[in-house]
Length: 417
Image 1 (spheres, helix red, strand yellow):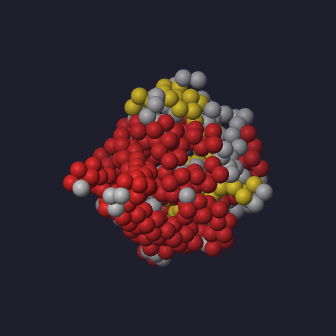
Image 2 (cartoon, one colour):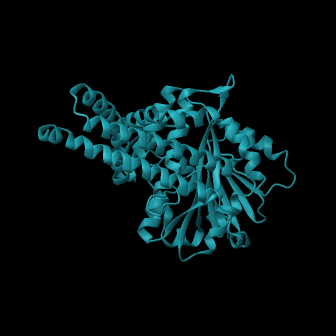
Image 3 (cartoon, one colour):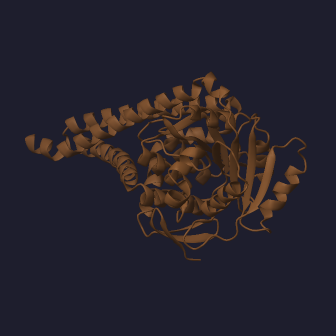
């Protein structure tokens, strides 16, 4: 018997860690759902400084006219927009101009052509640098700079919610929202790869608001102009970079400031991915994470690998224990399996609540297929996520918006095609 215990002891420890991890994730999901359901702080709505919103474009994103209309219809009195394009003939420019023609009371809008980025800077960051240079040339007196992606669809109160917390100048360095990937329907059902992307993305979203884990997201983030200038955001963090959000996060870490998650700024981002596109998208996100925050990347690999290992060894232990007649092992394995399954159901329930609070019950019905995957397909999602993570450990090149880059460090990149 003691021999059997020695053989099974490492597995029992693994199962205990697996159970603990699943319970902690359920608890964190509950915290996130409660945060999203909280009403906004009213005093944040009293802080509405002049703001410049910078949005880079390249090509035709999903429903681009709708996205432009959303950014033009913000309930915010004192903001200007800087739309940045790689070239004069970018197809997105014509679509943007067509939408602008339909608005009589649009905010001040400037169209800036950034040109092709140098080989040592990402095109998106280059576009943002061109916008900041343009504002500097205009002697712009905006107190807050907001960065937004062209494929996000913000609600009408998005800008106010993102800017308001900056009244806490002594605590908040950057405010950020986050995306919630919404798989597009095809014949009343989304692509399977899109559902996997949405569930994996929601797992990341659950940790937004956790002080040590919150990262700025480039699709929706704001920084005070004086804070950015004081610490030389342009030269010290953006020049030579591919990622704007990780660099903005590093700025806050270096200066002891907080990345403040604005839960009212969760943004619906439509996606329509096949498996090849999911692999490319996931690998790109994780490779950027590995280069910019290797400690966070290693933690992510460890957490996902622990779940996968716990799942398969528990079922293997259940079967082998029954065959061998050593009943302690199958009993413990069964207890671990049932506990983790229960924690997964709680986690999925809290995520449903978060979706309902952030986007309403209509979106909850729209996402019913994805929610079902989240509820019953956890191990499949974890395996796919682990494959994506491990793919990011191979090589240091990626493709983004038809450009291929090699990443040797946070500000050591080279465009190779």
